[in-house]
Image 1 (tube, rainbow, N blue to C red):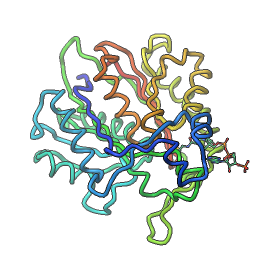
Image 2 (cartoon, protein in one colour):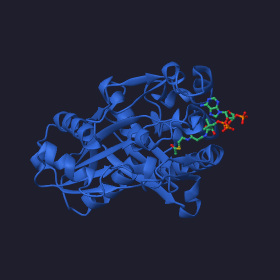
Image 3 (cartoon, rainbow, N blue to C red):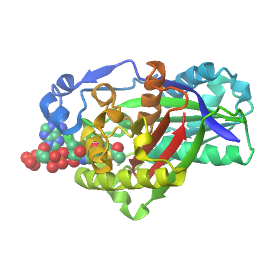
Length: 315
Ligand code: ACO
């Protein structure tokens, strides 16, 4: 049995805020943000643009591209750390919106690695024969947990959701998910942390430690996943990395000794959307024709927990 990405979708809030606009209320500048992070603007959700609204919009596009109906889904996993409700889950709320009446639905919190972890979980369940079609969504509303007076964090994030329909198939010419390399380190949780108490709900981060963690861990888990897949890095068409920061992506490319043009980025327009970055970028690349069936792709995420992971797949 093979497992392919049959369709993708993405949704961004309507309101986009440039660095210059942000600099009117926060003591920062376009030059500082751009040179340190590669970020030029971020989308910020309005009160109606809840996580399930964006997730359902992304899901409907992914279903249409996969050519299947919502009723055919056996599983919905929403990778998110900002579901907004303790219950019902964002996945159940998406289910209600799209009418996926036959799906088992739950959220999965692995912070910025949420989409990778959701893929890892769905893939295992599909290989066991639990379902033929699964919907995995990665999305976050980090802007609702930002202290807008803390310039060291508030400039970095935006809101978004992206989705992929995974399909199990026996078709000979189909692609496949070839390997994963996943990890967590709870003892470093304080590096990137956010509580949900009414009096304490701001995201805090030790930026330099996150930076060091990312540039060490991402190339290592990508190498491990490639080895498990029996693939060489030179065969990889694109390395689709979590979009936290252009400098992290540049450092990962350098450590992997691979050209930067194989590391697509959408940071200038969408900033760091946590679990949303990988599926949104995947969908943008799918829509603009950069993804072709048969391409070897690496997806890699890292974030709070700490959590990280890489997947190698034949698209
Ligand atoms: N605008 C202007 N000045 C700022 C801003 C800002 N937005 N933020 C911080 N500064 C100032 C600081 O106050 C400090 O000033 P000082 O020297 O007078 O005290 C100076 O800039 C340097 O601050 P640092 O925090 O040391 O800045 P650094 O060069 O480390 O850059 C950054 C910060 C961009 C966050 C960097 O640490 C980084 O890239 N870290 C990676 C973390 C990351 O990308 N996290 C994303 C979320 S986590 C995730 O997705 C997994």
